[in-house]
Amino acid sequence: MSTHHSPTIEVCFTPDLFKYRQSSDPILIVVVDIFRAGSTVCAALSNGFQKVKPVSDLAEAEKLKRENGWPAAGERNGIKLPFTDYGNSPVALAGVKHSGVPLILTTSNGTKAIEVSKDAGDIIVGGFNNMGAISKWLLNQNKNVLILCSGWMGSMSLEDTVFAGALIEQINLKLLNDEAFMAQKLWSEAKNDLKGFLQQGTHFQRLLKLGAEKDIDFALSFNNSNVVPIYKDGFLLNNL
Image (cartoon, rainbow, N blue to C red):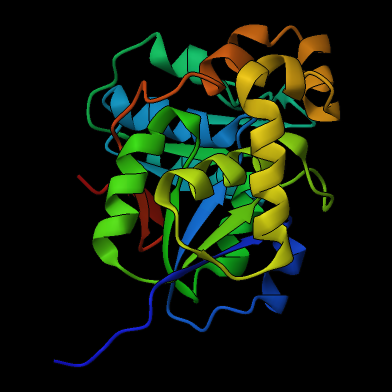
C-alpha cells in the first residue's frame, strides 16, 4: 500500500492572493464569504432551490434572468439590485419555500473567489451555517485543503479570516502557511464572543448601517444547515 502525506491546510485572505498558493493542485477549495453570500447559498439550497448560479457580471446576471425566468438574488455594496427578486440575504431566502428552480446570485465579493479558483480543484462554499457538514466532507476526501476568503473589494475581511480559523480548529490538518496560523490565532481570540469580536470589523458595521442585523445573526449561526454546496458546471448544488 502506498504511503500518503498527511493532508495540509492553507488560507488565502483574498482572491487576489490565490495565485500565490503553496498547495499543489488538485486541492479542495473552501470559498468563504460570511457576510453574506455563503449563508445565502446555504439558505437557498436548504429551502428548495435546485441549484445556485453564481455570476459576477451584472449584465450577464440580468440576461440569465430575462432568458430563463429564474429568480435572482444579489447586491452591490450591500444594496439589493433593482432587477433582483432578493438582496444577498439569507433571511429573505430562508423565509420562503421554493420549488426546484435555479437561483441566480450576483454579489460584490463571493462570486470572484469562485471564478479565480474554479480550475484548481473541487470548490465548496462554507461558513458557520454548514461548518459541521463541510468538516465531515473535507475529512472524508483526505486531500489538501485551501480556504479561500472572499474578503472585501480586494482587501481581507475580519469575519472570513475568523471563520478560516474556526474551520482549521475543526478539521485539524497540518498548517501550510502563515495565514493559516494567523487565522487560527484570530479565531481563538474571537470564539468566546464571536459577534462582539466581529462587530469591530468594517463589513459588520457596513451591514449594520444597512439594517441587516438579522442577516448577520443568521450568518453567525452554527450548523443551521447540513448542505455542502459544491461547484459543478457553473452551478452550486448540494453534494449530499
